[in-house]
Length: 366
Length: 248
Image (cartoon, rainbow over all chains, first blue to last red; front, side, top):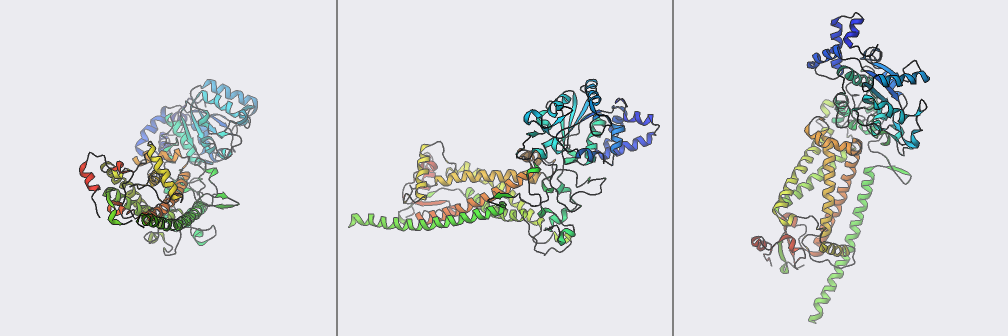
């Protein structure tokens, strides 16, 4: 594929019917979270727009996002890779490797300058001149800046690229930052998650492939159709929350009965993602459904908000761990005690003042 | 001391007083329901079927409804506060940080509270208390914006979410917003403990009608208060007459 064909062109090359093409367009409309009224636009985009060239870089990360991506079911990751985009560079998914491959990257960046989509997976280590993360003999930060210069748009894939990720956890020894702190002047979209839902990844890539632009984003730069709602507000266990039915422990009756995991530290109420409605592995399940609270993996700074199994974060105080309510009770008790002591002293002070006044008043009269 | 020697001063407008008691009620409601929301307890009356449990007395749904309703009442009650501020000079409690006299009065009250001086200069509105109200309003402001930031994001495309949603981003992530909301709630309760004590103590020490002034708007002082200039400007004679009516 030369990266210039449209989806319809591809269908024609393969001798597939117009009917199946329209079916695919309908499916795409649904997956992208668009209204059915958008179908004509999707069709005309699929007929005309050339398939985008994608360069996929890997930085300070674990490649878990790749693992997630290749398990995309609708559309199949293989379909996206082979039919919908032209993936010119990805050091984990490509058969090629080594110097010729790096040379190919340079060529691609030159040939499609200003046209290719840059997908970045992983944070950017900036400490020690970026040498904590070397890719192809170069600091990743340098490779990223070079690749971003000619990119049409940048996808921040995963929480590392979007927020910095686990390696940016305090005290962040490698000084890892999100991609958008290093790259600027390009349309950037965040696809956070550790990893992101596969269908969300392919959905955003496909949206770009269809319309040649990034999908609409929320105030934090995440695609609205996938990160618009809290997991809590789309969770199938929400009725248990509303009814005050909470699992207290992972082995109690409430947990077995599938009650809300709020008290076990579920971060659903603070986390924006599609786990509640898209779910994972073609709708098979998601963490809360399998009995484990959300850890908020698509939120900024989730890695520092431990302990994951408590509603309130633990605060280390003198060899023990406490929380806001305990501190509040202790300090509130101390305030009451202090106030009582002050009150007692005030009574003394007043009686002293009284006797003083009596002397003063009494003095001249006497 | 003796009521007979005291002069009556009209200080607080009804708007401030109603606001004050609305604030008390809503803060108590918000704090107790908030504690439940932060750490819900199961009393076993709900049964096993959420469809029916939701109508139970201690359901999260009802607690949250009370919390949000109280939050709206609380927020809207600031209209009364603003109106009182505009209408009545006695309601203008913002400490005069830019005046030297304010600091002198502040030190005077501080020395009295630390038992170094047996009494402080007579004043209608305690300078230390006024400083603490600024702190309270700041805490309340944080509670309101963090509260609405969490609340409005139920509908991320609503206009409320457009106004308050960025707060979540500003403070890092929404989890941090929950934590801040929780801690500041406790700080407000600490303020309330000290505030109630100081008011009761002032009544006990000086008998100037500190507590009753929040009902009647009137204080009784045996001596000319040092901050009398703050509530009168000499031009409005009718106001002045009202304030100086002698009760004894």
